[in-house]
Image (tube, rainbow, N blue to C red):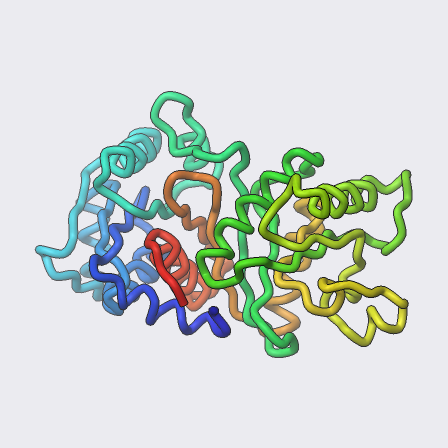
Length: 306
């Protein structure tokens, strides 16, 4: 089982065949830098989709020295064609990972969700982040902070199923999931608490499998044994959560950034629910986060055990 994000590098490096990463709208310094470092580590081989002249100029300017036989550049000038070409490369079996370059998240996801040639595989696409937090005793996952704005009960089931399936592949066979709310008691005026309670019951009755769900739990009860004991909360999840299911995108986004900026957490994140992992990095992400996310995608694109 993974205990540190640094292990992702070794897992990805140990693959017999390097995963092929398709960088959509590749003329982007930050994305190219992350792809280049992953390439130098032996984690991926790059396929760069975008304006070839701009890509090569940027590679020369920033010293991204790919071996010519290891790199493929597919020339496209229009953003919508870059998206379509990138996704069709993957659908045709020529790529294993999709990554966002100098293009908006909305533009890329429109392509991923395209009913004719998109990549959506599950009912729900969801964002999954995996944190290494100095103050916590193991890796901690968080979902969903970037895709689903205000998920209803059915969407939350999909988000959980995406995460459970993926976590099983990194050695967490029965993840402990805390359905987060502001309070621990069910309050009919707070949908986060009623959804959490229903998810917990559904889990106990076998409607959601291969995990243990408890909720509603406040954040402190989910990650602190001391806090859960003080409030008299018992169970497998309290104080020992593997995954935090947040009620909405606002709560998730704030918590994600608090982990990174206040708790000095390291993080890797990908989009789940498509036929391949999707890396959506932003300029606000650190270089380490971008590289970790590529490593996570490369590892999750293969069948691996840790």
